[in-house]
Length: 551
Picture 1 (cartoon, rainbow, N blue to C red):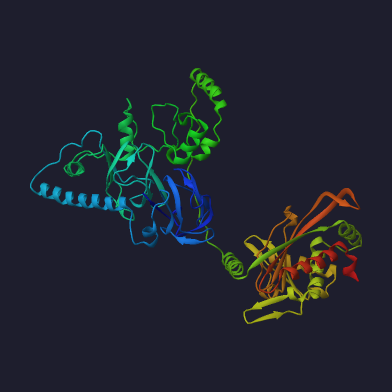
Picture 2: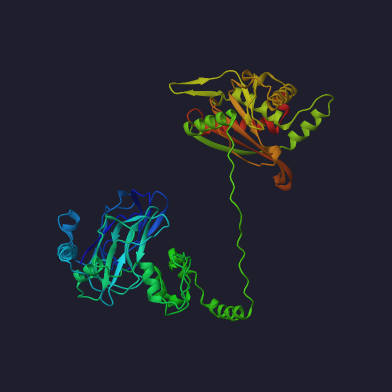
């Protein structure tokens, strides 16, 4: 009998899926638990198991194609079976029709029950061996659930641990296992329908049970055992267990206890001859999953037993439970903080950023700086050298010194370089105007003056306007490499890292060297990758040979 498999909902926000890869081909034999395909959702690429056995008769979504949730994904059935009606949508599987009849009978029985109730009839006890399964509470905030899909049909045999249905909660779509053995006698909530927690989801019991009588008994006040309650009732512990205690893991070392395992985990365990009762599950509610079986090492069993014996003799120490008071504090954002947030967000979300990084040999630059600073009343920093190199490189690469204006690109033939300065409340960018015309000492003097004004809150708006390029330096904090957000309306910003002493290769030999990483963030609307790379090559040449900046 052919089974239709639809595109599953593998995450709570999934609207459609893409088949990344089929692991079975049309005509292949499929076992329950086999991986059919890898499906890409909006969050991850996940393996999708088959819940049926048979032959893969039809693939509805090809590799690389996407389709909405519940679209026809595949059909599994008997080899040679006619599935033309299922593909065209003109027919339905026979078991679906039978289920419809069963549900129709159930609906009729409900009406009869209500008639009996109106006449004053009262329900009796639920027959022995019959279990009424209610909509489970699968999350702490769940008030109602939606049946995403039924993996069993009315009349199917159900074994303890098998997946009955996929239930969509307020947080995720989760598999719901059966806690009982028997025949699925009744489905109370159809696929796609929702119901509150504790509504009748299904009835499981011996084949031939009078479902109408069971439903009448429930309506008449008979006991309904939900999944978690049934588990407690089946176990019948001698001591009372606290209700609604969350269960993070299940120790299945006792073979008399039920074993929760996925179909794939059971299949792998059977192939490897592994006793599932020896494993601890890491899945939802302690369920044993594929990785638990694959990571199981039988040799660990003996030491485990010894450890248990030792633990019987050792004194029990209560685990440390940290305790404290959660405390938060809210501070009003300053106007500067709001402006920084607004401008950086606008830049990041409007300008398509990309990043280029080079490593510069600073050995010659360090020697040149020492010579310059040996002169009286002169002090030049490495940042001053970088700013000077940027100003000269911008004159050679005018495309980097541009502004995007939708209909036109503005080429700035003047060079105004902004230098990012950290202040107590955030970040300010004083501007060195016509930096290409300044000497190293003039750049150093102006940067120190503007930075001092910024930190003392004496800088004017005019001194922070008009930049065409920006330099941000975190090297003094030991940061070796970072990326910056472009300071609009600039087309690029340079991030300067720390000078690092490290082994380098020179003339075929390993020697001690000093390097510095520079990262250029570019707006792809105005600066192409090759243009940005050429700018960095010119910049590197100036910094590695400072004498060229003095020519």
